[in-house]
Length: 241
Image (cartoon, rainbow, N blue to C red; front, side, top):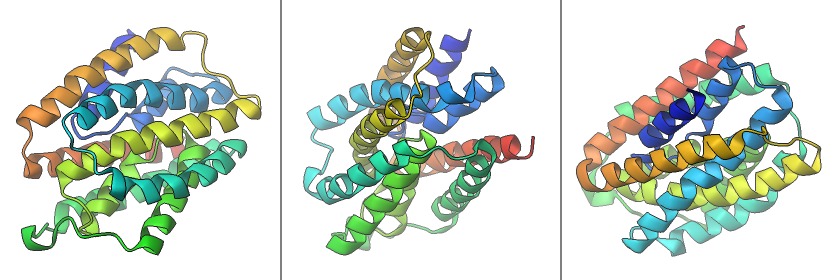
């Protein structure tokens, strides 16, 4: 049953280029996973879900690797540092939940203007953005796409579709680096992760295809906002438990 839940989450998130790390963590919290297993399990599932999305987006030439490179290079060392660090769960839930709510609000209320979309991100801005998201990714087990996509859209650095395509490889890299750090400090994925991974991969296959073929730019924007809002509410609810 939990495998089916992971598949559904992965499907929904993959429609907007996300892996589902926040919802994976929420599902594990509901299922009373040991706290030491939650972060590495979420990171590993992120890698699995983002692998197919990255391949499909790249095959369709939707990924702007030139734009992605400074973000990824800056995020990798900070994601590793974050992976070495263990945060109290309630602090993580509260802070991350508030940040996701703010990101959702930006997507809903800041309207995109077609004539200034897809601007080139200033180098230092891109580096600072990548580094900041990287540390959060490693600390929490979230791949970082839920923070990257709204920033790209709000700063007019990418359209919603482009942001989805950039998020998948960004999540993959940061999750892989963060997982190395988590394992180094003694946190290991759940023994059943292989089963959950099958569900996450199947969901990602369907969700990415749906997002590419049937979601418009406007729909992608609103689906992403809904995903962020739902994840934020889950995290804030866990922080108050």
